[in-house]
Image 1 (tube, rainbow, N blue to C red):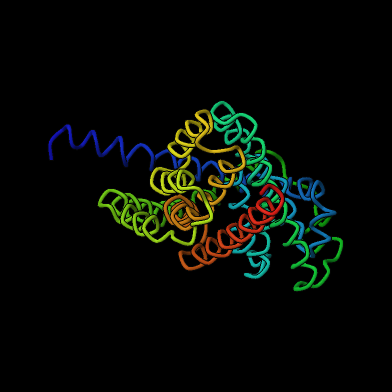
Image 2: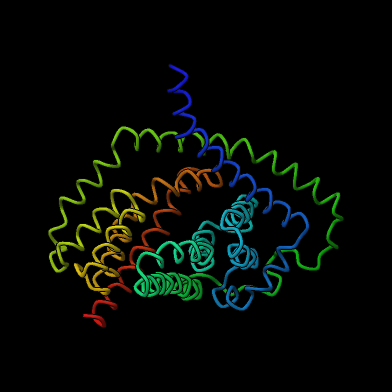
Length: 320
């Protein structure tokens, strides 16, 4: 392999993989440090009313609060609790969906400032609709938790008040040891999954799937033909290209504002399977066993698509 090919491979695969591993490792280290310092009890208090309403354990409330800052750290915290036996599988699934709202809000500024310069006011509607969908998922989790889980006690077995928190030196030493113990697993699972996703992308498997979807969209005949083009671009090149096309059609009068919003929402929904496999699977595989990671992604993204479809349907009824 030539030097030019190696550099190309490093830029396309090596650098993004290193950034992903660094982000996951930092998230895991933060989660371990918070656990060792027992700061999760303080984080849990921030979301205690909502977590208690959902019959979730305090560690799920701590992960909810942490997800406002770092969804990766929140996943690391849930993973640690599940492996330690403090969260059952059902509780883990619910806690993961429970984080939908804070996880979405961490990306909201990026989404808004990407869409606003191109679309203007339709960007506000688009972001608000996706926000409502995230609120529905978190609210639905609260309802599901009340129906499926028994009420939690005040301490919920989290060790609140059992012993004083350790000093910084002892806590950081404990966190570092746990981090080093988990790091190999994170690398062993994340790297092959990410490399697999890269080669599937490189050799056109995702493109073939997206082409198949674009050819079988007759059921979208209620949309204007220009809107279908925006959806196809959303599938083929994700949000950036779809925004460019939508902005051009909006400013030239090819699509009305409501048509642009609808096209972006439908494109977002249809791109859910590819987004889950391409982006979420490598990240989740670093924290959870592959089968569990896949289950969490399927449930999370499936509910995401359903909630997005619901708010899109309501938007259609109100706007058209």
